[in-house]
Amino acid sequence: MDFSVPASLRELLSRVRAFVDEELLPLEAGAPWIGPFRDLEPRLERLRQLAKERGLWLPTMPGSAGGLGLSLVELAMVGEELGRSPWGHYAVNAQAPDAGNMEVLLHFGSPVQQERYLAPLLAGEVRSCFALTEPDYPGSNPTWLGTTARREGDEYHLDGRKWFASSADGAAFALVMAVTDAAALPHRRASLFVVPSDTPGYRLLRNVPVMGHVGDGWASHGELELVACRVPAAARIGDEGDGFAIAQARLGPGRIHHCMRWLGICERALDLLCRRAVSRRLTPAQTLADQQVVAHWIAESRAEIDAARWGVLHAAWRMDREGAKAVRDAISLLKFQAAGVLGRVLDRALQAHGALGMTDDSVLSYFFRLERAARIYDGADEVHKSAAARGILKRYREAAEADG
Ligand SMILES: Cc1cc2nc3c(=O)[nH]c(=O)nc-3n(C[C@H](O)[C@H](O)[C@H](O)COP(=O)(O)OP(=O)(O)OC[C@H]3O[C@@H](n4cnc5c(N)ncnc54)[C@H](O)[C@@H]3O)c2cc1C
Image (tube, rainbow, N blue to C red; front, side, top):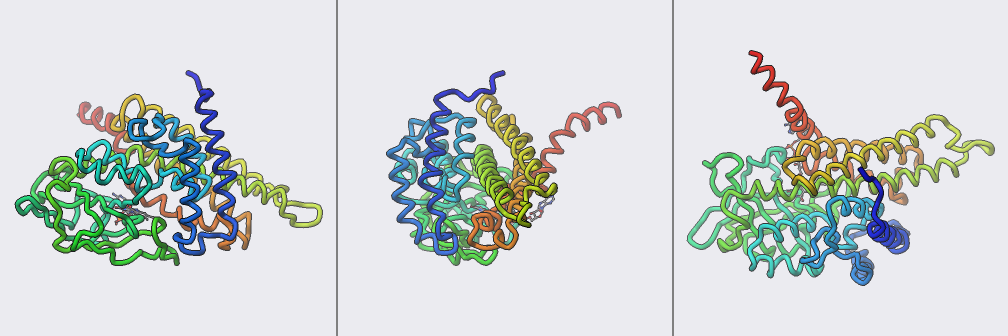
């Protein structure tokens, strides 16, 4: 077993680190998260050009799609570096939800869908959103949806309501999950459709306010209405009933991406915590770091981040070799574990900053507000814990049944 990082990856990681340190962290001056995302966009556009010039564009995509062609392990390590900035993934066109949508279109899209939707997404010319969750149905059970797609000749008519479609504001198209056969087995009921956002009947009702922030553009979560929204049959991705399987395929690597991005945020928060600990004086002779409780926060954070990283990298390494299905339980374990580490590390860093940590002057409060959702999106903690425990208990149950 060799844990060393190959020289070529070390070189890429140091270029990504330099890009984040020199180009992205300076963007935080003036706390742009207070204002609308559109004010930041021109500067991010320039950085996107720079990312292309520096060979950092599309780390999530294979070489054949103009990407860096990284393995999942390599991508995970790059993702951690990018995660230290709120806009790291965006700057290299690897941001959610577009990165997942690119994978869907690449692996399951028809040649026409790839030309019309994937190509401009890869070029960074358009954005997209993924609309699965609904206000009136439990997102935790994605086989039970209210949105329907009724076949009428060569068309489907979509009706329903979606929300928390991240980045729907300004998206050129949505990938929409809708029931095509309510009588089918639960996992075969829904299909996935590409719906351009200018299709009559498709409407962005609002950006859903989250913890006091409405958001806009890429940094928003939309509520959508579909009323007699007609799309050609060719807008369906894959076969009828494939929707759930495609969404699952999207989520496997996607959870690894999220976990490593979170660990990047953790590293950033721990760095800020340590800087604060040695610089904040409680008396002329004592700093925060002299307090045992603060020292323990630092040690606990270091231990939790490192443990989570090994878990995520190991799952990525296995996924590279065995495929997503083989590591489903491992991904469930690390999804809630990493989300928990993120919450705890951010909380300690914020606490150590006192009132400053609560202000929007600090990136910590921005990360804290944004990432409380980590324990909810891509599967709530409780759902992942139950799934992982089911996997662990399977052979015990079978043995118990065999024993009578
Ligand atoms: C910031 C953010 C971004 C998002 N982006 C997108 C997006 O781009 N596209 C999209 O389609 N959706 C998105 N979502 C929605 C997200 O996927 C859902 O919120 C999630 O799947 C949970 O569904 P729900 O909100 O309907 O909660 P519910 O399913 O109603 O569950 C509520 C709570 O009940 C508990 N619970 C549920 N099931 C179980 C169980 N089996 N056992 C024990 N406890 C349980 C959990 O604590 C859970 O948090 C986003 C959400 C957030 C917060």
